[in-house]
Length: 128
Image (cartoon, rainbow, N blue to C red; front, side, top):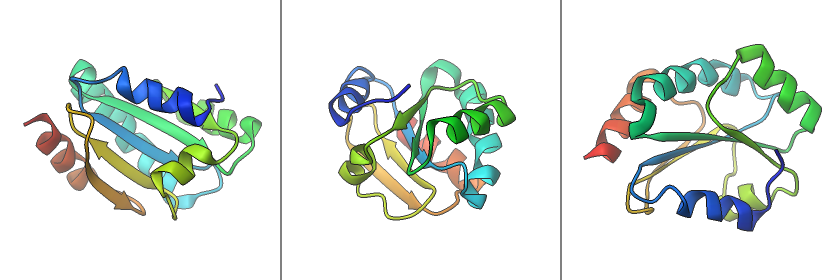
């Protein structure tokens, strides 16, 4: 599903009260492939306590969908067709992960691949 910058901001605002992990990715990004199973496990582990939201950017919708299908991802993913979501978040590398607290404020930005341990740590911090 392609989203505009305003629609994406609305999605984040709609999650106030729950920490949100936003992951900017692309199908051609090797570290993104490593990260996806970690994000999927985190989505299942933290279930309704944390929202994990993937944002495919700088990619084709077809390649992004194939990537999602290959990994069998069940957490929500959207498509940044214009690149404005990526620009608004100031992402300069793939992948980039943003951790927003339950208050909607950005807590942590992780540029490049994230390890399972670091992901768990930032999620646990966001839940406090």
